[in-house]
Picture 1 (cartoon, helix red, strand yellow):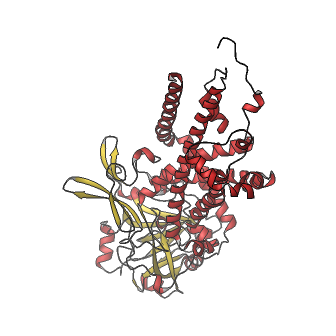
Picture 2 (tube, helix red, strand yellow; picture 1 turned 45 degrees about the vertical axis):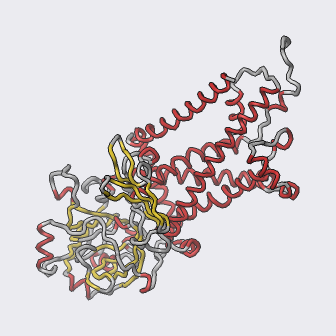
Picture 3 (tube, chains in turn purple, red; picture 1 turned 180 degrees about the horizontal axis):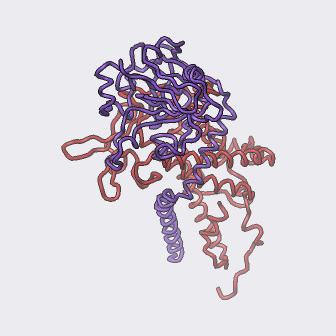
Length: 262
Length: 284
């Protein structure tokens, strides 16, 4: 009988040890760069499979006025304290210009008024935050494809980069505020998507500072962090490697996936 | 007790391999995937520990939430389910992390990674989700082609008639022996049908529904589940049901192994390997 109990106790101990190892092992393995690159295979697989299965122009679901969230949560920067931005706010963005540059035929510099007279698109869509929540809002803006066709994207360009006015607090690790300024990037397929717009109105009102005034990106088939707020300039580039952390976005440089369609 | 006892039935009858190699291999890959998906999933849940019904989040009225708030006695963990609150300090809402009191929905010992790190949690989750889906595809194709599902999962009319007795026997932890032990019993059949054809497909489909990319290609998923936030709620509920199944499943394996051990001992097996381990190995 005692042997029997011993066996069982030994077994339970072994099980507990395996469990403990699994938990502490996962943390150690998680910080291992080689393992991380193995896990990253899943992200590029997701990107490729979604691009393969989802038509380039498939629209994200659109909703009715009645579905609009009464309280649309604002995340990330909600009140940028960058001096250049505060000056723009003081002047109601009269001095703000959207610069389009990089690998283009003609550089553009557009005022808010000039953007507002371009053909516009209005869409009621669901905003999905990487944290897990969703809000529904109505957005009006100029299709990015329209602006890019005016600038004339040259064949070498592969990505559209959004440079923003806001500096998210980075815990004081970094010294140069320019290096921690928010930025994002998308591929040319998403840039040409009909719902990809540079929004200046939200729920029928001009965009507020909380939600990214004067201009934010709407990228309806990806998560919220891709939708850069406080856009200052749009750059067409061939590679993301030379920008900031090299992973194509503020959150991407901090471990999040570049393709956020999942 | 002097003479060495001879087993009174041949070895081949004592150990019967109930499961084909492919069932075993896919099962153990699934165990690894499910464990890591559950733990990284709880990490992801912790980033916004509230669940809602519908397309969008009604932040003031979550269906389920796990929060921390400050009271005069310090931090209190509070779990609320459709308006009913429970103090879950120590486990849910508030728990200790490296000896420090921390406000986090699920405790650090059950999340991957153990500290709050949504980006890493997502990376693990999607890697093992792919592995789980590919593994499941192999299992399904084989299960259909080999008639494993049709032969072993579907209860016969006779077995359905004995469901009450099977339930009573199970509650007494008395398990089928001899020929009957070679087949899944009717309760196992129901549990496995539920897990394989309802819960796992539900996990995968509600997971896909949370992807804004997939929603543009298959908006029907949103209609099917009643919105993205409901899909997230179902994803959580189905994962909880699977976790519960795993607990019962493991207990059953252990109990039936010990039961088998007793059987072996009563027949005075001279096998010197630990019979409990051998029985668990056989059950797996």
